[in-house]
Image (cartoon, rainbow, N blue to C red; front, side):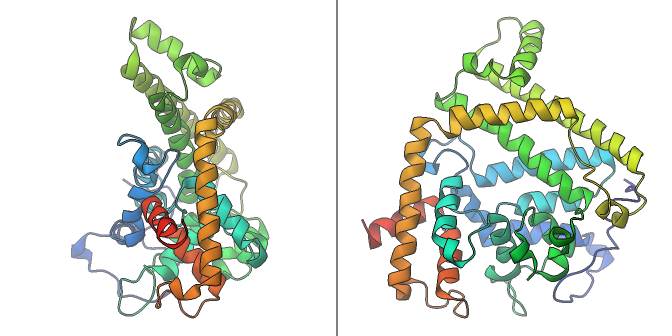
Length: 369
């Protein structure tokens, strides 16, 4: 497939931090395919299987975790990239790596670690993902990290504070100057949103915390369920949920493609540099954005703040806070070779963020409980 002129071209990457020989043509791998392969083989990627999305790993075999979520983001991202003639391999690499720095216990763990780190600049999971691929992975003889391409690293860093951006050189400039990342990075961000909203509906209904009747409060669900009911009269149970979710993902993807095409036509970018200096080009239409936001608010109120989920997140947050305090008082309990040149608080943050749910629980009960 020929890429659009404003897509990131395989031979036009801004390169890697550490210079490497170009892979021989006969290997068949582009720079972004190499990035993807390095991400998949990383320790942090394997750990995602045991990191919470919404429901703890031990609560059921069929609930999403950070690994299955990342795979779903990559699938949606590639499908949209193909329709827009963007670089599929780059979208896939960004999608697979975007949650590598996420803490155990989902957003509860992230919030708790951020509270612990507030005196030291806070905790940003996007920045942590960058630290993972730049420093924390130990796979190569010549450098720390995975030495990924600039464009993959740029996409991983979806958000960043002004203060932290100032220390990131070229990678942080867009947060300071207000410019945009590549279209591939913009796309991976919205593929993430499509994936988590819809699989959280599926998991919420599977868990019994949400009901199909409740979901009728959401216009996106209600409209697509009406279509499914007319197409498949009498359909119910899991098949009904899957069919409605499939329809929702389809209309979100279709709207995203059409609105992005419209914005590209209006802006008429001819290069990646034009994309960086334009307003965001990958987006939902105004009407679809309103409906997607309504669905997010519904999930926040009825699933993420459900008493059962809140009880789990409260306990998880307290566990993370207790572990941080313990390592502050007893830094010798940290692995002796764990980033020894870092300040103690940052070493603790890196260590806890890298834990899986079950390892954090094990450490808590071994050291504290």
